[in-house]
Image 1 (cartoon, rainbow, N blue to C red):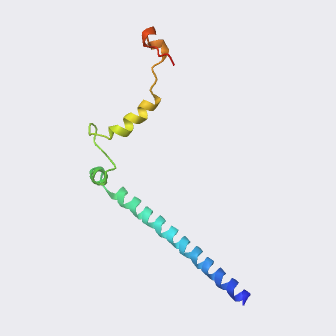
Image 2: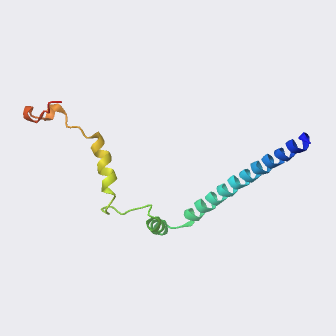
Image 3: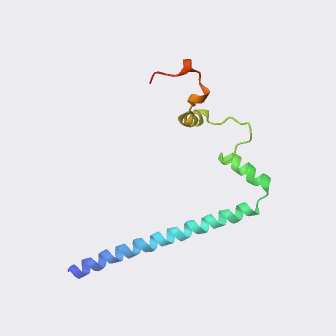
Length: 91
C-alpha cells in the first residue's frame, strides 16, 4: 500500500512539473511573438500603442508629482556651508 501511495504522489509531482514547464514554454513563446509583432510595427504604431497602454508620456505631460516630490525631498539637504548662522537650527 505504501508503494502505491508513493507512486501516486510521484505521479502528481511529475505532472505538476510537466505542467509548469509547459506554462513556461507557452509564456516564452507568447513573449517572443509579442517581440516579433512589435518589431514589425513602425515607430509611430509603437508610440501609439505605448501611449494607449500608458507606457509613454509626451514631454511636458503632467506626471505624478506627489511620489516624485516626496522622493526628492528625502535626499534634499541644505548644507551648512550655504546657510547663514541665523538659519542654523539648535538640534
